[in-house]
Amino acid sequence: MVQPGENVAELFKTGDKLDLTALLKGAPLNADLSNLSQYVKVLGSSQNDAGFGPGTKTTLEITGPGGQAIVNLESAGKLTLNELVSHHSLILPPH
Image (spheres, rainbow, N blue to C red):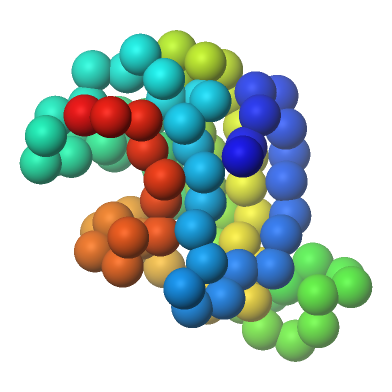
């Protein structure tokens, strides 16, 4: 679970899930998640950080009622928010 104020780098492979419930608890998410981009932003993609081997990471900024965090999804490749949602990669509070 991503906690407020964290700057996290974690290996992220197909099937992994990122738990954003602590940060987004209380956020008025639409049932269809059409407003999720107000809280979760893909800042971009770049080479993995040292120690994670070759590959590409995607960096997210999460800002919600529970706080803010930056998450580097190491070795995830270049991902969009729509891809993360469609692959059920995000654990969100009830909406």
